[in-house]
Image 1 (cartoon, rainbow, N blue to C red):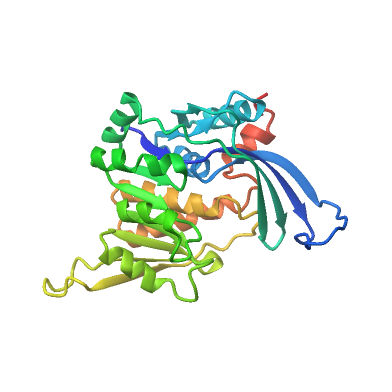
Image 2: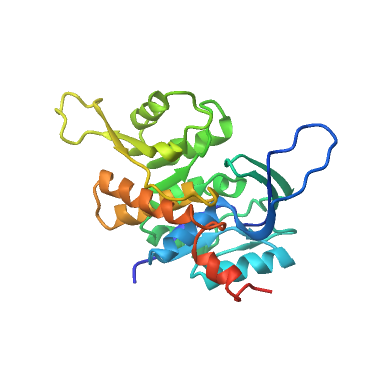
Length: 302
């Protein structure tokens, strides 16, 4: 078996509340359409996706010994995700207010603080052995950037709804070989920002566009040697599916692309694999369909 992909970033225990519409900023009462608890966190989502595709995964995250932490740990381990966790005072927890149109307000009930410790010898070795390292946005991941660079393995990152100016994202952008993002806050045309990142050193930049699929920018390997700035646009359509919930679709897309890329797929084929994997997540109320069995099928951790 190949060495595990190392992923650093958040895993959380969340309560999801569905409403007819998001609350107005005035005192009032609303009835919930549905509510439930589940695993959250972008790194948990990617880890679940990769593990379901048969890739060994080592998730480096902050988890406490509280009830929420035991549930997160139990659900991830039951789904085949390996953990290299650090202790925290409280496990990350959110209250997510959701509308059926996909709108969301996330209220952080707790967010564990990064202890600031260097990676353990075992984690440093795991990064050196990994086919890829995923650094998701978090203080802990930002502190691991130098160690990930020293490991010499390809670095993947997900900058989500980057607005083109947020300083927190910059170290991730500068370190990454593959950059994923969405177009929610970047403006009508994300391509100028994507091209800037490729010219700055990234190998590939991918932007998800929701129901319109995704686009990627990379260097055209077949271009003239003199045209070293020639960039290539690759597009992929979304896979049609009846959408139940959009949580985790972007994480599943990146997991599908990473799995296919490591298997030797071309960029367009890897994007297609990502679109197909994302479609499976749109049909479940959890981060990934594997949690339907783990959390809803009688195997929910205590």
